[in-house]
Image 1 (cartoon, rainbow, N blue to C red):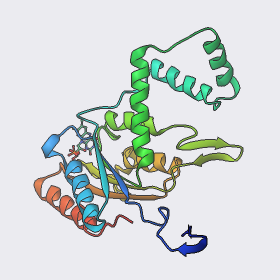
Image 2 (cartoon, protein in one colour):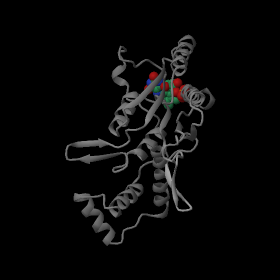
Image 3 (cartoon, protein in one colour):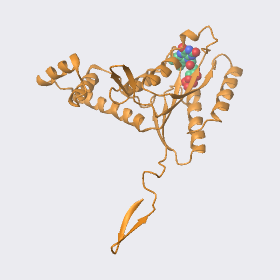
Image 4 (spheres, rainbow, N blue to C red):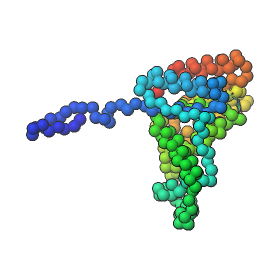
Length: 249
Ligand SMILES: Cc1cc2nc3c(=O)[nH]c(=O)nc-3n(C[C@H](O)[C@H](O)[C@H](O)COP(=O)(O)O)c2cc1C
């Protein structure tokens, strides 16, 4: 509501303030499989996004294909640029702060390509921070996640933005988001499987997003997809059935 004065008389005009108007939800869609159109996780992540768009009109979707356009890996240059920016923001204390202070005083600079790479990692971080919902196509490669997806996750591990260390331990700062993971794997790694201990894919993702404060996390899984065409079909159908009841909010 706001107050309007007309010819000396005050009238209260009820209007919808911008704050009370519902902002449309933002969804960030990430894929990381190297298998193109044959990819199971790509099929699942696309189906999840379609389902959420259908059930939440106005959903604003942005997309990043990490196999086609990988984000930079961590490197000495990127680390230096990151520490320098934390130092300049007054967010580095202790030994690291002293080290950066000495480095800056001695005129140490990161080279232009490291600056560009650091900027690219910040773009990926900002996309994540801006999203309400994050849908991630995450295949299992060699018991873990694709290195392209790991490089993206490295962009999200940002002290002061997604987590902070406090006197009582770590505080996750990315709590308000919903993360949906489309998981695909050739074999079986669920709790009842003798191979469960080799799952460093879903367990890593659950651990990482939990660390940065995400509590609303869903795994849609197709597993055993390389054990035969019937199991592949069964796994896909079961995952698609889970997707059919997903909701954006
Ligand atoms: C490089 C590579 C490594 C793989 N490593 C494993 C593995 O460790 N365990 C497993 O069960 N399947 C493994 N697979 C099979 C994939 O998990 C399976 O094909 C899955 O569908 C991949 O997801 P995508 O179809 O979205 O690419 C691997 C596949 C590739 C291409």
